[in-house]
Image (tube, rainbow over all chains, first blue to last red; front, top):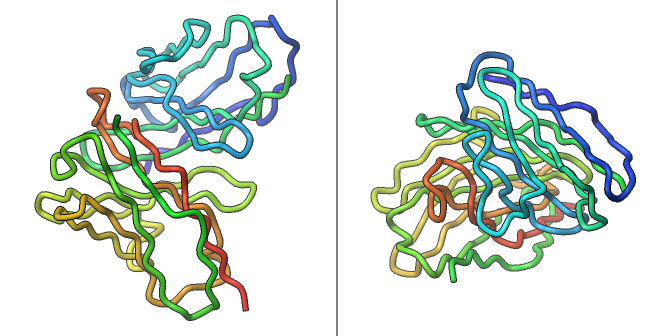
Length: 107
Length: 121
């Protein structure tokens, strides 16, 4: 089973800063990585899929990149509403999904 | 509008049974995989399993195989998650999710608002 390791566990930054979250897979997953945002007390929502494609209505400040085993989510200019836990997820064509343990972003 | 609607909360005692529901609307329910994600208090997201309503084919995460049952009713566009004997460790938020409805990828692109299950004696 493929494992996903996210780092850092917690990230503190100021509004307007650029931040980068990391997700490392235990073996190559091609580009089958998604990112989700879960604001405090809220339902998770899809941000990025296929490693770099933004979902509908996701602001352009969110950028996903990577392939193989190394993936990143970059928030180019942090806003107060970006305070959340961010999860990466591996998916495939064989009905199996794995989440990383999450990175908490504090502003 | 594509939606997954869940009831807010359920309270049960250990060893009791429970079946929670998720009603879909705004898309062809029988055409897409629908499933469940667990989030224990203060913890991360765990995929539990999915079902294809058209033929009731299921796939469970190894961690949840044999622990829960997922079913679906196409006549009411509703998916279910069932326990036969709850444990205190089943206390968690349970999200209903659908895959590949909005985006062309096997990701969880639609989420219900969650049902919190509390199991305590």
